[in-house]
Amino acid sequence: METIADYMHRFETRLSAYIPPRSSWTPADEALFGPSDLFRMPLDQAEALRFKAIKYAFDLHYTCNDTYRTFCTEAGIAPDDLKHPDDLDKIPLIPDRFFKEHPAGKDFAIWLGNIITGEMPRVVINGSNPSFDEVIKAFNQAGMVVAYSSGTSGRHTVIPRDQRTYNTSQFAAGKSVITMAYPEWDSDIYGYLLMPNPRKTNVFAGKVCGIYFDTIKEVRVAIDRDLPAEVVRLAMSGENSLRARAVRLFNKLNSLRMVDKIIRWLAHHHNAGNKIALVGAPFLVSAVIHKLREQGRSFDFSQRGALVTGGGWKAFEDQRIGTTEFRKQVQETLGIQENYCLDVYGMVEGNGWMVHCQEGHYLHAPYSYYKPMVLDEDNNPLGYGEWGRYAFLDAAATSYPGFIITGDMVRLLERCPVCDRPGPVLEPEVRRAAGEDTRGCAEEVRRVVSADLGG
Image: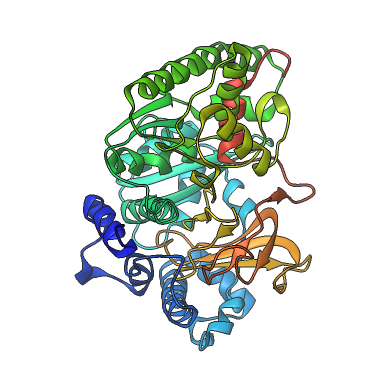
């Protein structure tokens, strides 16, 4: 069997366009692009890389981001205070709600400019009162990759990535998944993206999946149309206006055709004996399974199928199912083995992707450049095995400070209870903290696709 080193070399050769020239690598690049396997590094080596990477990122944002430096000054923390890996816990963390507390119109553009680390691109915005989409389009035409996610509050979380950070985020996601899928990845696979088309949307749920098209032979897209921010907002907010009801009806009718197209695609590749990989929202997979069961049909992709889901577990017809039951349904109806049915946990604010291991389906952190943390009610770090609010230090974020407190509740373990990988893991079930709005890439897709007149 091919070694993991050869396997990952083959992947990195195919995706070389996403990797910056080695002569330009920063400590953050070294920590992500250098290791062959992000999940099997010796802990002491990973800790040394991570400390250098996060310290470098903190110094960068402190020096080149006036807004974040002011935040750090108020907290009394400067780069010289980071002398040891344990000192990383001193880094001031930004609440994720900060990234959704933005004004409208040209003030939104000014707000975006103030949170960008480094030199601001020349952005041209026409009109005195531009829309949300028009501001983002102007930044992206200037070379940025500004993307957003939404929640049930109707407010969009907006993150400004430059092209390098965007490519790094995609590569980190791809490398994390391909590593965990060892030894099954090859480029001769047909794929279906169960997310919005990354070339037709600024929704992060789709945007981050751009690398998928370069990783395998051919990819079809479920939501292959423009998704304006207002459509996403109306779908997520549950608003009951005439326009919101019309949007939900349109989406509902589209979803019925979408599921039929996916089933026809599955049937074609099943009959042709091709290898497939489905990537995207659990909701759409559940919708396909539900329809196949109604029809009394199933497929057997046991030796030639993989499924990678992401973005949360609010599932079909508003009924939540756990990851274990979901994998069982996938194997019974699509034939995809449970060890090749993996979930990814990440978010629009970050560039670290935690992936299920095949053996136990715990979420493994890429611990050479990304530090997961759990905080108590006073935002103090908790030890392993304690439930608390999830936070992270992300060295891969170079165009904005990636030191974030989230609205998720998690439990972090020192290592996986099942497999032999040495790094930290999250328990598989992640939930929202009390009082936080429902959000996530999968939830956006669920609401955009499944909304109906009943709300």
